[in-house]
Length: 281
Image (cartoon, rainbow, N blue to C red; front, side):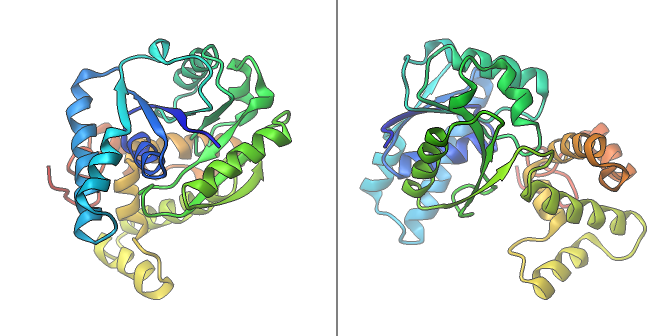
């Protein structure tokens, strides 16, 4: 299928998507306009490669080749026209995504996807010249470990576009499920409701953050607890999604006061060094 693609956004998810695509043999253009983030994104990629080498998943030559298939690009307008796939992975702000998707669509990719975890694909499609070639492609963090990609079909997404997306997912060594465009899709609703309840439990003193997470890991075999996962995802991201789903589905998705306060204080999780847990710099 595709040999050349672009990922828009050099944050946690964008870097993860670029990594797994390069691992699968794609030439990846990673668009990150903020020069201050460039050192961080390359350090993340190098650390992931080093970890894979250390676990015997690849050798040094394969790791160097993977890194060599990723190129940082400073703006969407510098992307070549006619790429096979562009995946948008910028923060969950509607105005930002609409702007980025409109500019990406102008580059005429064969397939355009948004990595949104909650925003309406049909609403985002309003910024896209050809909505038949647009869909949601929701990855999970950490992208290199989790095997699922949730494909979100908009009202006019074509069957051909879905098949291209499914082929891409298969080439990454992952599996897909297809859902229709409802707020929160399937996975975000399941994930968020558990995380919000864990926050409310912590807020009301039911147990410590460590023990709430241990309950999920030991009793239900979750690979990581809901509070630690929230730190990894980013508490600001959790808050944005909660507010989106509260507007769509009601008070059960209302963000706890604890989450609102932590975001206001800049305790955003792993990326800020402090969230429900303390994270190394």
